[in-house]
Image (cartoon, rainbow, N blue to C red; front, side, top):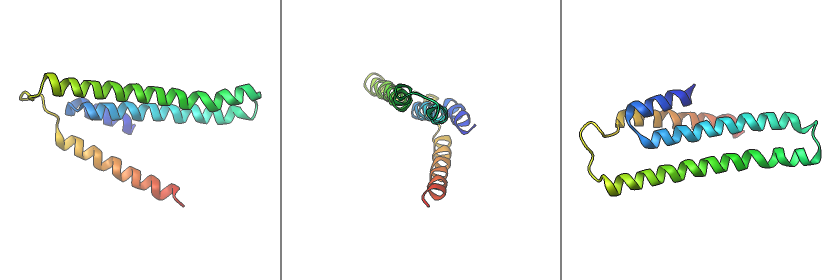
Length: 117
C-alpha cells in the first residue's frame, strides 16, 4: 500500500528519483514474496532445486535493481546535460518529496526498533 502511495505521489510530484525509489521498493516486495515461497518449498526440494531457490531470487533482484539504477542515472545525466534549465511547471514538488522521505525514515526507524532486539 505504501509503495503504491509513494509511486502515485512521485508521479504527482514529478520526481524521477521517487519513481525510481518506488520501483526499487516494488522489486524488494517481490523479492520478499519470492523468498517466502522459496523458504516454504526448500523442505520438499532436491539439492538442485534447493540451490536454485537460494540463487535465483537474489540474482533477479540484484539485476532489476541494477537496471533501475542505470536507467535512472542515465536519465538524470541526460537531463543535466541536455536540459540544464528547469522550465516553469516542470520542477519537482519538494514538499511531497520531503513528506515521503520523512515517512520512509520513520518506517526505517520502526523496523530497526522491531528487529534489532
